[in-house]
Image 1 (cartoon, rainbow, N blue to C red):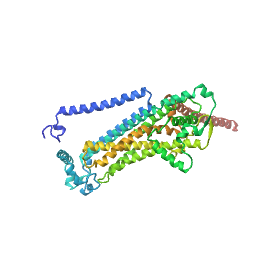
Image 2 (tube, rainbow, N blue to C red):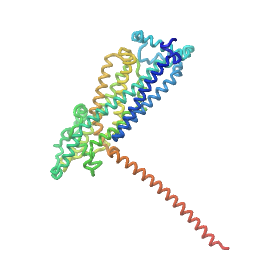
Image 3 (cartoon, one colour):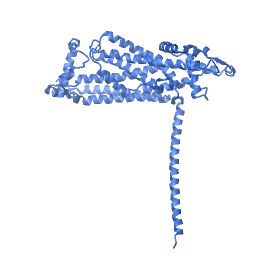
Image 4 (cartoon, one colour):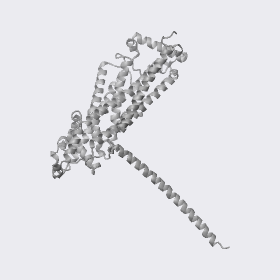
Length: 480
């Protein structure tokens, strides 16, 4: 072939083309690496260790993508030589074979024919000679490669947007923290003894829905609708803040609960931004279920939506439970109304489950959006694998609703309500205090080890002396 035709190898490709392409690829890679590096330095300078660790998590994901890319590139010649009978690849297809000619443009057919010729040349007619077909074509392998890359990028981007917008919503609560702290330290307020009538308290009025089985039903209904409008009020924030302080740091009434909550959210972000192994398992399962006529990705879109509604309802209901515990026990109390944090209010008494569910919701939503963009770019909007418009539009609408609701309602609810567990998080300590505690624990451990070694050495030395003295005494008492 002459230079410039499709299918030419490097032997017949102009050197300036190879050099130019390599220059562009290396420049983009170095720019991305430097951007991540300087972002990390900036976060370190600002003492944003949780966000820095989240950035390291992103780098790990990029390294994983690079390794996947390397494997697919190195093994592609071996994969296309895995031959199977033609009947094996005729089942569980994303598109019907009868639809293929009507949706393939002449340019697409020409491109695929060129790739097929290239594949056949690479495989050396290995499968054809056996009257079989490749298990996975070179073109399909390339498209799968692109999909995995798009999925990881979209997931990291969506997780970042969720935490940024959710964090912005939580930072709006700072004026609540400031006003509460100011009111608590006014001299007249502190010195004036008062009795709080529980039923007249703003928190109880907003959250208490009566007693009995009927109230339980109304409580869940109220929790369901509350997450869509004003999910957290100032009275909620003040009551939960006071409950946390009186339970975990009673000796420090000046504790900045809002600052602690922001640190805890940033600490959890490094978990949300990563793609865990079980999420890759879900990817494989959903790819397997993408069968023509099943409309799998339309039904899958409802999974994160239902889970998100369930999580938001549960978090709202926990606030109602905290209000009920106070209202059912007291008519009036001296001083401020204090709720009692407890793990018993959470699913299986584990507040961490909420974070796992949010992680899965964000990933599943990113998977839906990434799949749509991948099909749009790779095959076009009218591709049979895209599905009917009636199935596409609801998926996109649900994806947008999930992103907005999770950012502005569920994530702020999570940041506040998960502090109502039995135990506090390590983020309760400032960064320098955490480092000091870790150093102190390390020194204590080292001292204990040295003390144990010293005691053991002293014991051995004492035993040796006793044996020596025993030998001398025996020698003196032996008759000559």
